Length: 349
Image: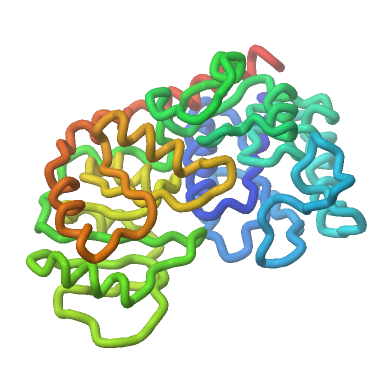
């Protein structure tokens, strides 16, 4: 009987879950069953091709940032608060699942604690390595404990301070959230601005200034926006949307942060990109934005632009060659990565 894979998804939002489901489906094509693990309340897991292990929430509150701030916390951990029943139940269920199912591998996306738990359980692990400088003790120990690392981006976008041994241990999967769109979509000149869940969202006053600065373009805004007031005719607020791709398809320019979900969509659709990296731990978005800029795949602006800066920034963005960003999309990325995981299962099993 083929030993299963466990795929642990931490509190990182829909983009990480989408990646997990895509890889689980690709592994199923090899006959390798995959169990998704995580806290999935409010997330769509209907596309999971196999079992789902829904775990108790381990967050202290909604402002959870992945670190418990304890001065006496062991250096190999980011988040191990004491006397938290959710954590106790969460780790216990993962351990019970491993004892019952004898997995070939656990994919950890992302958690230093679960990566170290897998090693304690004597289960090989494939730990997802995100962008940025992740050389703090918990990340280093999690990466050392792993059998291999998985970067969900092309090697050309690897940025930050990454030791050589870490790069050598990495499988560069490419963008794994979904297959590239294929045919080039017909553009209608619109500008699409995207705000995700992880940032502060948009401010209406600023968006009005941007739309007024470039009045010959229709501006479409996806995601949360705060503030009230009159909205110019060329500014359209759509609020939160489940799938941004249909809105991005006709765009001549996409504006937004350097989060995994948006960058994956921009690359898949081959869109010109004005990147406004948001502050994130380990300089994750800054590292990704720098790599995109270095390759000529994006115009990068740090901080929200002043009203007078919008017209030249939009002009620079529209002057980008979309073929540069389109070349970052590898049509076989998902199948190739699933094949590498299947090979790893056989090698370490």
